[in-house]
Each structure stands twice: as structure tokens, then as C-alpha cells.
Length: 231
Figure 1 (cartoon, rainbow, N blue to C red):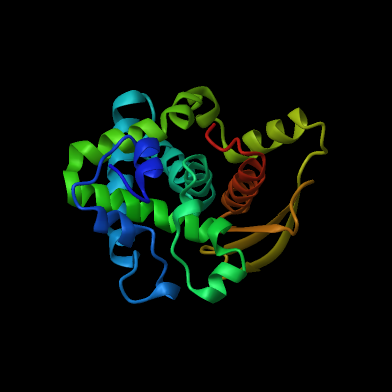
Figure 2 (cartoon, rainbow, N blue to C red):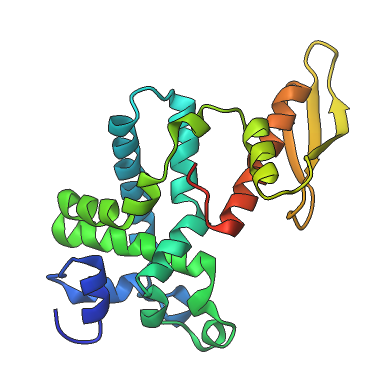
């Protein structure tokens, strides 16, 4: 491919037959109606399917819940934004004046959405096997770093071990609210941990479940900040 998108096409290792599709995938809604939103919708589904299939085949010992948790870590906004930065999508984004002035070319949400749109564009342009190849290639390092042993640990254990490796204190869990009848109570818990800008909440039908949810959210935030959220 020649022209304005040649460098990006090379980093993707995919040559578009219809370059207009790639151009649309890189166009934010602030630039006009011919933007990436429909392609993003498609790409989000394609990405989820590819990652789910890869995880299903690579990790036969993981349960449905564990596979879901790993997939969520791989396709969350922060993870996508890092991949988008790796291939310098921000250099090619088409933004309206307001978004351009406010630094939209390096905003996680826009980078992540645009990368999903690029996946959608490749799917439309070349089919499933082509987009699968591109996704697996971009995700090679994150997929290689997945540690099944770490995945099997519960969220509170993973959070505490992460903090210990950073030489930080143990997390603190505070009960905020208990509602409902005695046989059907609902618990709201907050988790405080070094590195969090503010406490993270978790909810559930028991204190244990609420604490595990809060720990999982805290772990996701902290590991995303360090760029190591694939364990």
C-alpha cells in the first residue's frame, strides 16, 4: 500500500483493498458523519470472538469464569490503547478541531475505539482469517505473558501479592452498606490500596463476594497503570 496509510498498514501487516475503509476506521465522530462508530461496533465483536477462541484453545484447564476474566483484561480500554500506541494509530487519526486541541489523538478511549474500528475494517475488507491473523499478531506479547497459575488465584490473593511485589501495604476492605432481608442481603464494600486514586467498590450477595469484586477492580486498575494486566 502506498500513500498516507502505508506505514500503519505495514505495522498491521495487512494491505487494504479498499483504503477508504481504513480511513473511516481512523475518523472520529468529531470530524464528521463518516466516522468509525459502525466499524468499531463490528470490530468489538470480532475481537471478542478471536480472543475467546484463542483462550479456549490455549487454556483447556480454565473455567468459563476464568476465561471470561482473562478475556476482559485483554480487551479492556487500557489494553487496546496500549496496542494502538504500539502501532502509532494516533499519528493517523482524523479528529475535529476540538478533539485535536484537547489531545484526543492520545486519549485511551479514542485510541481503543479506533483500533476496534480498524479490526472491523479488516474484517469487512479481507474476511475473518485476515483479521484473526492481525489480532493474534498484535496480541502476541500479551497472550504469551498470561500465567494460568495466577489466573486460578482469587482476586484478593492476586491483589495482595501484586502489592507485596511492589513493596506496598496490604489492601483494606471497609463495609459500606448492608441492605435487604436477612435471607437475601446485599453487601457494598470498598477497597483501599496504595496506588489507587480513590477507593474501589464491590457489591454482592455476601461480604466475601463483595470484597472479591472490589479486589478484582482494584487489581485491574493497578495493573493497567503499570502495563502488566495480563496475568
